[in-house]
Length: 218
Image (tube, one colour):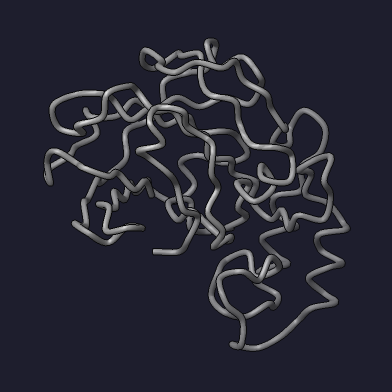
């Protein structure tokens, strides 16, 4: 999800964005990503009555890597500069480490120690499939996605840039490792949902601070 203040058009499409995927600190070498299956605009649904743009991909389309989203500066978006964001996917990661995004026995152990029924909320880091419970389905998803070393999502640093041409672009500095862990949402089934944190991640863009992202379940 991306909130845009002063959105010029309520009919955005994938052509108003560019998408790239990769897993290192050189976004210029990343590959073009598949376009989302849908792009919808909810007028006034964002923070400060901004317009909230939701992009949805098919499940499992982008896993254990970074998605670079560039909001184009054009007549439809109404922004003055291209704005670049990074969304990390680490299926089964629970945020147990500030120095890596490995999915391992520590994530599984944490889930076993925090089993509960349908009493959770979106901020529960062990509820990786976001169904309100921490149970065998979450743990099974972790076992199926054990990742370490170069196979795991990497904590990256990317070059500073106000605007970035699509899709291989220099881009704004990504969040700190702690913020990256928040970005490295861990949904075992819902690749399209940006979760689990409900915290605003600020200062990821420098183009008039017109576009921000919120990691919430739809």
